[in-house]
Length: 174
Image (cartoon, rainbow, N blue to C red; front, side, top):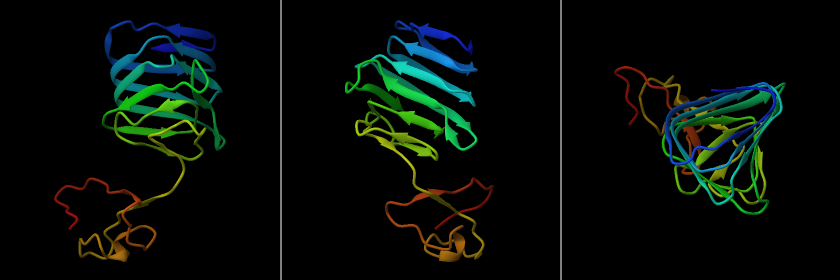
């Protein structure tokens, strides 16, 4: 667990971590090496800056980042060398909101979809900023994906739509 409000540096070397929690009340963390963790979580309502070593890969199986206060992004993720990317490999579950990203290539893993307010510079391949997500409601009762009445916005999602389908015991979508 990383805590406090002062600048910190994290040197992982070749270690593999089960869980990393960042509970800082501001300041910064400089990640000097690549990193592998099964679970990485940072939630902050204060300005917090992460600087990642350019050229290094950060592999995170589950990643939860929330840097949100009064609808303002408070968590920045940047490279140690402007215009040179750090690499993110988010392999499965992730939830990201309230971040500002610069010079990060996330194409080595699953696409990273962010919630508002999040943004990135022009050097953030694999990151997907903004957009809305429509949620499966199943209200029409027929269980069919192609029925507009089963979606929160009343529109059948297209091939590039972002959707959320809550898990329900015994339910199915066809």
